[in-house]
Length: 371
Image (tube, rainbow, N blue to C red):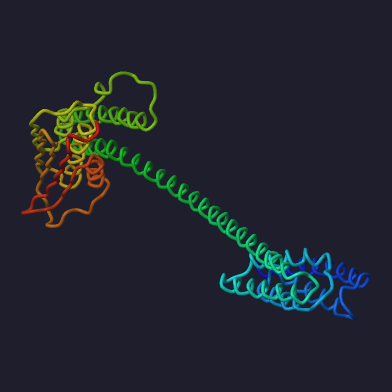
């Protein structure tokens, strides 16, 4: 593509040079500016380099400038336009800057020399310098503006790409948040349903009458799961407020009662003065407690779980422990990852490890977090 552009530029400049050459030769033939063929030579030498003014600006200007030293008794009228176009192209397309400066100096010297060799007064040498320097400076200014525009265009494109990447990241984060919320809700409730279903199956084999209670618990849990899924969807896409949020929020006590009814043995101890139910820290604590019970019921079924929640003046601390069958902590899944994210989102800390056969999760969330 760049080669094609250069070929197109050369053809256009060649056509322009040919047009000026015909006009210049027509003038000097009708109105000679020097003896013999000197005038025609001057026109040819100062006009033909115009064909390479943009592809070879340094070389073509040097060739043109050398012909300024040919003494004449006048000027080709079209030659003034040719000189301006050539030197403007030198300023716009010439590089490096040192070569442009050296070529401009050479053209100025030959212009002054040609003035002294011609019929003009020596003071005309000032004009000879200006006619060289002014187009070059104008070309350099245009070159600078073009580069600035190119830089701004590139920066605009980069900003557009950054904005697109930021939007994609935001979409990805929102998807992860939705997945985490649904995991927190569905994972816990489905674990309870699975435990209750196992109890119902065992009861049906021994005493069918005893299966009624776990079956009813499954029905209740299923309805509650649907309600919680709706609440998550409402939080992600708010609708008209149907009442105070606190009225729809569960407490740690109800979470504990449901887990105990589902067959997850545990003890829950809560001390201190909790924050209001609608506070983000309170919601995070409830989610963490529920996730700890869910993980224990799923990965350590039948093992007792001990959970303590301490509400202090500066932070809320949650610790959950249960016997572990391995000496290495489990690979973090959505549950543990969700706990860590909730803690870090509110400026808190998270740790999970196995020590002396006990798996422990410890979370600390500052109570001064935004409410």
